[in-house]
Amino acid sequence: MSEEARVVSSREIHHGRVVHLFVDTVTLPNGHTTALEVIKHPGAAAVVPFLDSDTILLVRQYRHAVGGYLLEIPAGKLDAGEAPERCAARETEEETGHRAGRLEKLGAILTTPGFTDEIIHLYAGYDLVPTTAATEPDEDLTVLTMSFADALSRVEHGEITDAKTMSALLLAARARDRARA
Amino acid sequence: MSEEARVVSSREIHHGRVVHLFVDTVTLPNGHTTALEVIKHPGAAAVVPFLDSDTILLVRQYRHAVGGYLLEIPAGKLDAGEAPERCAARETEEETGHRAGRLEKLGAILTTPGFTDEIIHLYAGYDLVPTTAATEPDEDLTVLTMSFADALSRVEHGEITDAKTMSALLLAARARDRARA
Image (tube, rainbow over all chains, first blue to last red):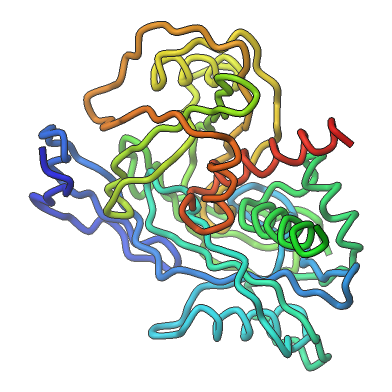
């Protein structure tokens, strides 16, 4: 039994602004041939921006797909050829109006590998300096300041449900606990 | 400024096995009108199955979208009208061959709210009893036993990157830390 799948054919269904959808006919490693939908994504980066050791910035943003506003960390798609850390720095500045003097990698998530290759690289941002936010007109963003403890409590109580935001906050909390241990 | 977006029109692009894609023309709460892609998803449930207090089950599964095998907790889509907890119980049994005597809610994640409404309800499963796994032919699954500590270490070291798996393991670890404090 092979460890690799073999793509028999690939058909482009839609090439939009965010969603680039293909239906692939694939022979799986177990020998079974099936049609699988794949959304190709350029990847993204997201940052927990620490104003000080106990205070972070979050963005409140309207998300049409879920029909409401979400609390999220600043994030955005990689530009063509852009390194994840460069994207993380750019999105922090564009969305929060603060430049991070230092970024530390927290990890990365595959958001939903059943149908997309989207990966989001996660960072903590430190040594923030105010600049000028340059929000795009399609982004309906408000920047909020919140204690890190409050944000973690909201993760635990289901008030922050965005996967990248939850994962990054929980990873940052564990990194902090390890540093203190 | 309204708190609600207004959908001017909605066009179905693709209705496949997993991906049900629409392009909506939307007037955002900030008054800007734009075309937004939305993948409608039925929702899903996922479970961290605890064999004992220090040991969990994971599934190793080929994921065509990311071109390789991933370590994940058992999970699957909600059937029409199915309650998340019922789905969590069913998927645990189908994928691991163990029935959970008790499920505790850990939380829920929105996997990638920029383009889908997919929500995954997260549970911890206890009091496992072996049954018979009934894997579907499109699922190329292997069940692994791993210490909870090892799984958490893999989350921290980027070896487990699936968002639902990371989030569920990190939430379970925090719940455990709180119970011990």
